[in-house]
Length: 282
Length: 338
Image (cartoon, rainbow over all chains, first blue to last red; front, side):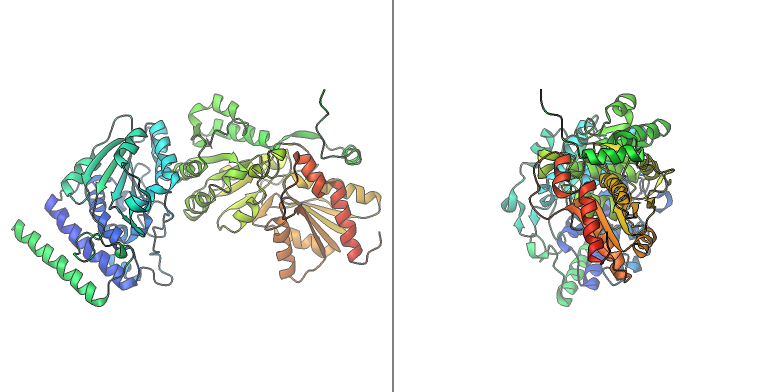
C-alpha cells in the first residue's frame, strides 16, 4: 500500500523473495505459470508496495485503487504479493491448486485482495475501463491499473477497450504490458506480431511510456505518473523467467514446473543474488 | 400500396383475443426502456450501457433525459459486457443493452466470466431477441440464448410475456444483487389478463386452470398458449396455461403441479428446440418420474425459414393453431378422446 517508506533496495530484496516464494508455490503445487510470474513480479512489487492505495485495511473503501490482472495465468506472482501485503497468511499458498483450495490457478475473488476473476485473456482491460469510468462519473479519486501480456494483445477485445478508454479520456487508467516477447508457442513476433506496440497505443489515443520492467526506479516513475485527458500505457520490457539462469528467455518455462534438482538450483541462484544485493548494501 | 404486414394472429386467433377481452399493449422492449428510465430518474447509480443500440433499445429518451447515466461503447459487444462488469463491481446498477443475438454469442465469454463467475450484478439485456428481426436472417436471431445461458451458473434468465411481466421483471432485476438476463422482443404484446403479476418474476403464473392439458409458455410464445386454451375450451378440452417468465431457475413446483393434474404437456417458446424451456421442463418431469405426453413447440434444428417474426412463428406453429394441434396430438397419444 502507498505510504510505505521502503527504499528501492528494500523492494529489490522483496523481488528476490517474491521469486523464491513463486517457485515454492509452483513446485509445491506441481503446476503454475513460472515464466510469466517471474517476468511480471517486479511490476506487482512496485504497484503494491509503492503505487496502489489498497491493502487489507481499506479493502472495503469504495475509493481504494483497483488492480485487475488480465494476464491471469501469472497468478502465482499476484498471490505471493497479496500474501506479503497481509491479505492472507502466506502458509495458505501451500494449497495452491489443491482440491478444495480457494487458490485456483487463475485469479479468483475467493482469495482476499482479488478484484475480479480473470484468466481468459482479453478481459481485464474492458473491465478496468468500466471501473475507471465509474470513478470518473462519480468524481472519485481512485486509479485503476491492469496488467496485460504482450501475447494477450492478439485478443481483439483489448482494442475495443483501448478505443473506449481513450474516447472517455480515462486519465485514471493505466494499462501495463508485461512485454516479455514470448508466448506459449514461441516468440510473439513470430506467432502474430503486434509490433510496434508503442505506435499502436499512441494511435489509439494513449500516452505511452516504455520502461525496463525489472527496474524498480523506472517502474515507480512510470506507474506513479498519470497523463492528462488520456489513459496511460506502460510498456514494461521484461524477461520471461527473469532471475533464474536456465529459465530466462526459454519458452518451455511458460508453464514449466521445476524438478527437484531444478528447484534446488533456482533457490541457490536466488540466494546468491540476495547475498550479493545485501552485500552491496552493507 | 404495399400489402399489410402479416400477423401472427389469424382471424380465428383474433376472435379468441376478442372473446377473452385481451388488451393490446406495446412492445415489451418499450416498457423495459420506460421502466429502466423511471428507475434511473430515482437512482443516479442506475446506468444503461449500449453498443450503438440505444435506438433499437428504445433508449433515446433515456439518453436525452439522463445523459450522464447512459454509457455508449460503440459496436463492441465484448467491451460492452466487460465495461458493464467493471461498472457494476463498483456498485453501479447496470443494464447492458444490445441485440440478444450478438450479446449472448459474441460476448458470451464476458457474460460467463466477467459477470457470472466474478459475481457482479449486471443486468444483461438482450433486445430484439428470438426471431424479432425476422427476415434479417439467422445472424440476427437469438435462438440459442436460453441454452447457452442455462449452462452458465449464477444467472437468472427472464423472458417476460407481456408488458406487466416486463415491468415487474425490470424492477426486480434492478434490485437483485446478482446477474440477470432479460430478453425482450419488439412486437406489441397483448396483456395476458393476469389479475396481478408477482413482484418476483421467478414465480410462474397460472393464467388459466384446467386438467386435460398443460400449456406452458415463456416470452412472446405465452400469448399463443392462452389463445390455444381458449380454442380448446370450445372443443371441450380444459387446458391449464402457465406463464413462465423465468427460464432459470425454473419454478419446479408450478411445472410439477401442472404436469401432475394434466394428461399432456405442451411447452411453447421462441427458441431452438434444444436447450430451452421445453428441455428444462422435460428434465424436471422425467427426473420426478412424471411422464405425461410431452411436446415442445419451438424452432427446429434447421436453417430457419425466411420471413417476418409472424411468418416464422406461423411456419413453425408457434401460434394458437400450432399449439392446439400439438395438444390434440399429445392427448391422442394418451388415449384421450377429443
